[in-house]
Image (cartoon, rainbow, N blue to C red; front, side, top):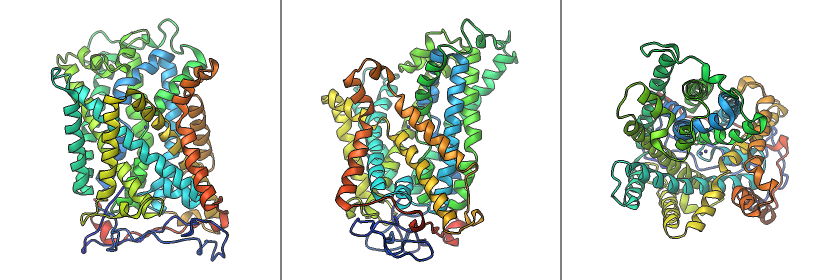
Amino acid sequence: MSAQTDHTENTPSTSASSSASRATTGKAASQSTTAGVNTAATHPIPPIGNKGKSGGVQRNLKTRHVSMIALGGCIGTGLFMTSGSTISKAGPGGGLVAYIAMGIMVYFLMTSLGELATNQPVSGSFATYNAKYVDPALGFAMGWNYWFNWAITVAVDISTAALLIQYWLPNTPGWIWSLIVLVVIFLINALTVSAFGETEYWLSLIKVVTVIVFLVLGFAMIFGIMFHPAVGFGNFTYKDAPFVGGFPAILSVFLIAGFSFQGTELIGVTAGESADPEHAVPKAINSVFWRILLFYVLSIFVIAALIPYTSPNLLSAADGNIAMSPFTLVFKRAGLAFAASLMNAIVLTAVLSAANSGMYASTRMLYSLADDGYAPKFFSRTTKHGIPLAALIVTTIISLATFAASIFGQKIYMWLVAASGLTGFIAWVGIAISHFRFRRAFIKQGHQLSELKYHAKLFPLGPIIALILCIVVIGGQNIDAFVHWDWQQIGITYIGLPLVLILYIGYKIKYHTHIIPLDEVDVSPTEISKEHKKTAI
């Protein structure tokens, strides 16, 4: 709502540049430049895959892993459970407008991230880009904020997984299932990055197949193919449809739609361990538009056509009632007697995928923070299989502590989850800003777009539109709280913002950093060895 490890002696190495503009003292004082690059303020990240004191991550994620992770990354409980509530609150037309608008924003963000990730594929992703192309203090704040978010989210996911398992085994204690899921997720991430990639590949494939079957059955019902009579499109004009509640209602469901797309930025993190990021990342990014159209817009269209916006079932699903999921209702209508149990299993795979990806993303972000000098150095140490084990263990401990808080300290847990709520949107803001400054610096230093392995379309319109929509969504998280001046609700909803500001300002004051001038931004690319590319498929 979103990465690598170590080396072996026979693993081909690649080189990566570190966050430019950040002197070892943490100060970004102006220095002499060579060919438009602030060489004095740049220090190298240990080469990825090279043998060294802290090791490095291995580029063992194949193109099919990256593509499927990107494909399945935007399919989760947001689509399976809460998508129906957008139709209930804003009508079929309002729900479609919200998802289309958010889809456009996410598309622009992912093309921006694609340009940055193919130029410098590192595990730190947008946090590294924030430090390198904007301000080291921003990279520090974004990195720690993102790590914290995913560490907390893993705890939420394992709690959700337990509830789903209790659907079949209601008399068993949920905490046991949560701990079992956490152990499994830890072991998957502790083996090799390819183990993570393979797990995500199959979990994502299950979700993709589910949506495709749903769409086929849905359109068959709408047009009366095998299912009679044809449902047609009457629900689009039923009562106040297609737009219910006007613009305020559409704005309110922007938030639901936005949360549904959280995690798509994980593609940037996986670039750090992709065997061939200059081909794998563009391939995954180029499919963003089509997967948004296929998985979200068409799914919302089918749900809106088959279920009237007045149906209480749409809101029941958003409250966690798996039997009322729009997908469950459609499968039942198609004659599938065990639809609820099937959807419970599929939603469980989505939650497991989210927890697995969350553990991977948070571990790799902490590894990258240490590698860039923003966290204790031992977090950058990796095993012989390229796993940052210290970062993984600490992240797991934080997730476990958060889960314990959900049992023994509900109020603490509530604030922890609230603090992580805006992180995805804040990360998206950082992506848009980083891309805007990177491209401007790239051109100002005399480079041509043809030099880029991949370049985003519609610059600068794309990142500007994405930035504006992100700010609108962040600002509109809880308008009612401002209308009624409910300070507690304002605090719970927006606590993530002051936390990021504290990290940013604190680092800035301590190290006296400044926004890096465009002609001093290091836009040099990272080269990937040919040996890695040969094993990328």
